[in-house]
Image (tube, rainbow, N blue to C red):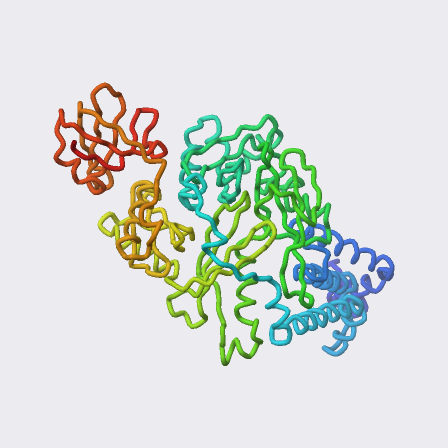
Length: 582
């Protein structure tokens, strides 16, 4: 019987049977037998996937549906890319060469590719028509500036209107206050916003709370944030304002009650700046959300056109082109400085800002806030573009209306004034806060709080703007001002009626010394004097009144003091101005 390899031993080897189809051939036949996906079904799948990705992106990134918002273009370019990827995947790769593959992709993605090209062309056109080289005058006109007289327009303000703290010090006080409250410190923390406002006639900083972590958010979000902080910028007191109903709409939320998400779904075409927390005169917390517009081309000339006020508790919201008068922060300091820099650079034309640089000025490196007539003004210096370490003037801008005044006052920059103040107290190693500009006895004057290493305010300093070698310090604002005006008299700057002003706040008391104690505070020796028949102690610095060093019990003395200079009124300690033997 002849031998056959195909049936040897009763086994059949298909691999040796040239007439049987191979495994690869069967797979190829199966692919050919599959029914291809029709165009309608494929397009629906592409659209569905693109829509899902787009909705997720929109929910988390919150782009404005506005041609002036750069994030709008990012959003739609992403949609085009997602659709093209889906179209290629759902259609398969049917091409034998690179050219064929390109033609295939072009056929499947023609419409989204055209949309992407159109968007890119629109971006390019928008950048060109808004370029400063073509629109320098428009940029220079963003901020309307009025020239004023500092002494005539800026009145001397009382001590209860001068902010003594900067943001860093306010944060320290706020964190310390929350740490004292056992029912809150484990659940919440203080945000870093600390917005400065005028509240019931006082300059304060308001700070919101946030949830300590995601678990605390899940367990507390039903009731919301139970309070907010008010830091008094004058007396440095901190108040935790507890609310009957918690704050539910806040930047600390993660889902639908997140403030920016809440705004986006109600104002889909609006562009918003950074929202700030304020409270109205009755203490109700609101979010002030500035509406951003572009006034030059598509992307240039950033400005504010009104804002949306959101009740942080109930979520009630309303857009105002002119916000209520109790609102203090609509135009933020960075936008104001940017707009002034455009004016300073381009008011004499674009090429002058590069070549001739005639009258080209810019704002200095920092800014501060001051309360005037129940509004908050941002202050910053103005210097020449050459950076000659001196100011040519400064601006004050109302943060609610953007009304801006320029005052021509030549003198030291803020950083130079800070260095002068720190040099005066270099043995104590205090650091100066960014200065305020005040009118002291008709003189433009930098005012600074002096802080120790723990960011606590220990002393105060005043530096004359025009002659920054005139530096006065004091333990209180009143003492600092007295020392400053005395130095102005000695330099012959104050003359006439200003030479001997009548100070109605100074009071005197006479008596016999019953008790005298001493203590060294911040490197200075203080004497605490009590008179016979009185329970009040008068705290007098040896620097301010050297005669205090030689006092003994039984001496007849006259003590000058100020009631507003009380150091520890709850313990009966008043800050004395001077003591003299009778």
